[in-house]
Image (cartoon, rainbow, N blue to C red):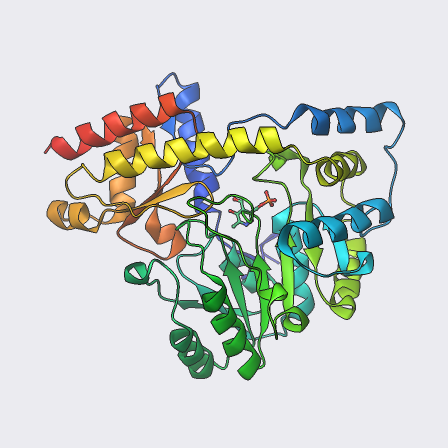
Length: 395
Ligand SMILES: Cc1ncc(COP(=O)(O)O)c(C=O)c1O
């Protein structure tokens, strides 16, 4: 043997583009540059005090030992009640497991349903990790091209055609969507469920932004609709809504046999999710914080409105108002065309010349677009807009 080498599968796994750009921006900051970093999807608000205190209490009370692999029974029950109250999803506690973040939940879910070689549809623009997660489960990611002219919500007929063309066995959906902010209505979600039902496909539904909504948009889970529950695995939690980013918590819910399989996988690869974090998540389920949530949503709403207003006055850029999550997916196709560059070069130039970190749409399979995260203070966003204007006017 010539030395230790990674296997073929791991070589197909790319580094997350969003983490890579955030790391580059952090390095530049460390080197003394005044970088505005809108690459990461991490709220700038702290974890709410009652939730953080529940974690501290857990340590003080010695709740620091192993728990059951799928989470403590109280939290599985609280998750079941929270999913019902918030999204009208009917799961027994046994059908809800606790995972170490939405990423881990998606990993367990895909590991439990993908057969080797299975084609799995991923709707573009997609969150960067889906193709890698499907690949790690030995599936074959099949990207369905984006539909910016339809508000980023695919026509069911296009999904049906992709399914038939590739013989897809399942689909990963993510609404509210990162990066587009798309939130389909009930009829549109039902149409996707119907396509999956007629084609015998499973659905992995990443609903981690399910409570981050604007303009009266409503989040509808495919699992809450006729024909949806029996074929869907739901991923949800408080990562984005309550800044539980570093706590690594989430719920995975679905039909009992698949959840049991996911619990077995988790018991082998992780054991239990962090015991202290489970106590914090229990607090998040049991004690709604309406004032805290209203304040966050008001701040996100103001930032969103600011970006929509400003960006649409910059020549060559356009932004349709996102209906959920906290990302602005800016259409920079005209600017790219004028400059003879692509979105990757555009983002490199923005970082090098204006010290503004943004993620190229290519990372989400939507070239010509650029994603700005507005999980950042208004001061940072104002700076970002100034820098964008300077960038566009200089040439
Ligand atoms: C759509 C989507 N799913 C999952 C995740 C990962 O969430 P977690 O930190 O809970 O693993 C993210 C984080 O950016 C995301 O945007």
